[in-house]
Image (cartoon, rainbow, N blue to C red; front, side, top):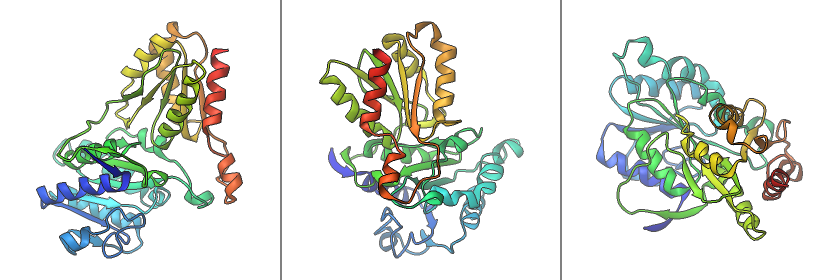
Length: 323
């Protein structure tokens, strides 16, 4: 095991798979000589050259469309989009081509493309600080992974790069510097396996991506007051593994969903519906949701922070549920 950043864990997965399989290549804006906007691919151009790490024009529809064509032709492309906000420019390629190709051609074509892109914020304002994971998770035919730790980031990306299905791999811009233990050797984190990141008996917190860290910090403070929260990291939003969530709710009888997206029609709405279907009789209180305030993200730093859930909000929500 070694202590590595989320950024380096992703880079390790890319490097290992590029060494193993010459069909794997990266394409995107400034991914080559510059090393990517968030430096995830830095050094890979020197190691693998122009053919395997390709700079592209600023044209997201072309990046994703060309990657889909390459995948159908037998290659293993990784299309990097500078932010998930720019995926809107390529959404027809993602929705109508990547996710449907296998079905529309009766299984004659696979589309093993990985679309890497960060969500997140940081004084980037309304058009560059959005969370679209729930949109993409609604699509049959598209796998959506959103890791919260360096360990999961590497393991899930390795699984993505070996998959024959298109994968939307959503990172978080505020997690690239977060460090954690990452095994030295090869390993995989399978899709559709939620993970209990902290055991508890009083309330279930369901979360993913950066909100995992907010939830764990809140759970640690709640424990100091004798409240034990079980924190479940979804890791993959499609396929969505609800088994650990349902088993936890049967034990704690309360559930809080914490996400960075807007609450209306977000992932939390789907999770609440599934809990209501499979664990309604075990609930002692309504399932609660905590997410971003439903406004376009402000540019002002104080207002930006006010728009997002923090530890204190998670703690207050839990205390209200068990009062």
